[in-house]
Length: 273
Image (tube, rainbow, N blue to C red; front, side, top):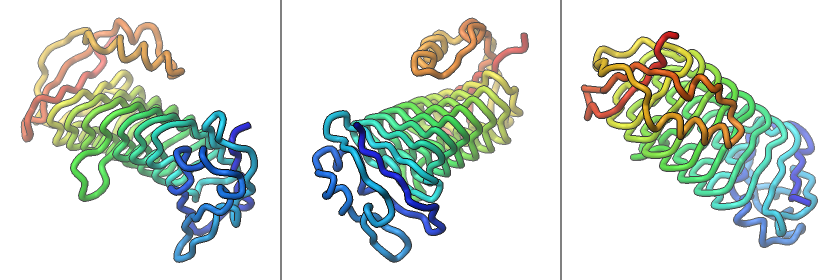
């Protein structure tokens, strides 16, 4: 049986639970888990003060968060192994600075999903907020590895200053997708906002659905079937992200830029059928 943490009632003040990771709880007794300190405003309640705690993560290294967790922040943040399931919505900073393991959010997630992610897999079955896989303010690099999958929509500045890894969003994406991107790959299959790729140096932005208006600092470099793309798409399919067969053989218009920066990034826009 996994470790089950059930929030007794919805919270108006956010609860920060970065201390409750699989790395920690897999070595603790049930009583020790209940006594872990969390943070809420200017108070420091224990986990057991707010959640019903049952089960154990000793054997399967799995934590299941239950109840209305929309105000529960930093679920799975910093973990290096194990599995986390959120049976509903999750608050900000899900999987931030995570280096391994898997997180599944079976609802919506707030801002900063996978911020500065180093490894592992994050799935969001609903919508995600702004700054998915992004760098924290004042930092040097955003996402540095791993995979983030969003089945719904996502907000602005996805992949801000990302260095490595893969982000895929099935629904709409907001403005400044891939802003200041250093490397890595972002794939989107719905509509997108303005200024995609602004300031990008390297990396790939793939638009399989929308044909966005690009900045004038990008240049068309031709039409092709990118060799790497079917490999990435098949891997996404293996991870349970639906990929249509015709995406594997589609042609893309390749644009290079941003020439205000290094200019070695690429924006791949699916050619009209």
